[in-house]
Image 1 (cartoon, rainbow, N blue to C red):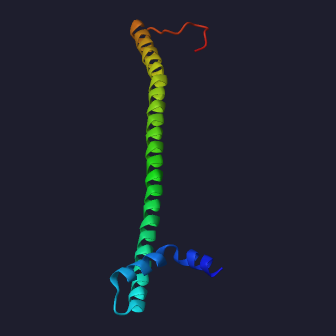
Image 2 (cartoon, rainbow, N blue to C red; image 1 turned 30 degrees about the vertical axis):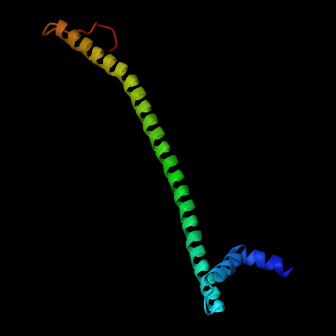
Image 3 (cartoon, rainbow, N blue to C red; image 1 turned 180 degrees about the vertical axis):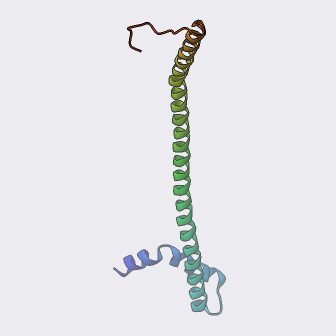
Length: 123
């Protein structure tokens, strides 16, 4: 049961620390082991923070790509709507200008002092 606890808390860290103590053979192995474990924990925390930061950056990058794609889609849609709008307005402009030309031609056809009104017809 104690071995499970030690494996859970230390993993292979303790075996690596003891192997390093045996390799270096310091004058105070307990102090050396304490410093080694402290240093290991410090490095492990930094690695964990870097890992979390990397995951966060990857998520932000993915969100940025999605946002860029959405912006492009909206621009394309806006362009298509604008083109459809221009196409639907062109015939109206043509009809309006031709109607105006017809009215101008009718006005020019009537002689000064004469009326284009037909008696008895409502205008």
